[in-house]
Image (tube, rainbow, N blue to C red):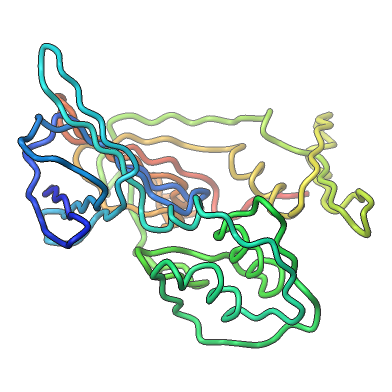
Length: 294
């Protein structure tokens, strides 16, 4: 891996061999995160970006610096923390406003375009009902909330490009004739299951989603949510997972299909790449592709 610092003026500086690196990609988090510790440099860092390029010349991560720390003790080290560009939309508050006849282009122009983002979709259908953005909502929540409510789709971020179409990746083969697995942990977290989710309808809370299978197990656990279906799906995602540890840098992405020991009903939920004194490793969290809801 090659690590570069890019200043606000676009100047590139090659960083020295790191002491440690951790990069995380998660399906439930729009922004990927980077944490890196490097030997102290005779250079003042202020803002800017971090770019990580793999041995094939492909950009594995690019993000905006969130935090810079220096450590002086037995050693002198520089700590850099960054998130992918969509972190800007997560941190920025959307203007509280009601759009009388909203469209995707209207919301994008208000919530993301001013920050330098691009939208791959060109549709501009005007909705026949209004859409309100409440005080305290982030730009991402406002824009993604519109997509989910009116278009029935989730927004994805790839660098500075936003799209409702998730990227397609080849099947990742783990175990047997595929990527060698060093460790494997299977977990069934029954406490994650939710039997009922309530949503608001005309200012009253009403049962919107119910998991009969969970109730039949004697589990009665409820949630109140602005998005009941998403809340139930989130609970089911976390119930049955597998964590696998592989040596080296594994090219994996959230929502990528996986064959695990010949089983084809898994997808990647999270990816963590680490580099430390023990070498490179990649830890993958997998979940079932089709979530069972009875």
